Image (tube, rainbow, N blue to C red; front, top):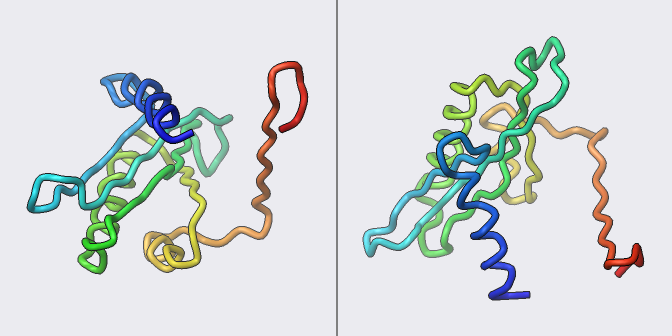
Length: 131
């Protein structure tokens, strides 16, 4: 899917990052001006509950650090900035999927493992057939 995937993501994400959109991103630039690390979060509505009275949840969708920029605190910095921003927007429920390597970082922020979390991907081709 390569280039098509990048084009589709760009077209989808650009308006979501605009004022009033539901996406937030934080980036740390490398000395050469390229991206060293980034974090992207999406805000979505849920039914209000005592733990999330404003009915807003935030999903940490992507956290990435370029391999040659790791072990410098960049991931921690962009995640902290993202979570702080989401809190200012009344998000009180935070979700993410973590690799084993990244899980200790997220635990530092207060994320906890959940044995109840389940996930399914259901891809259909046009006409309702599974791929």
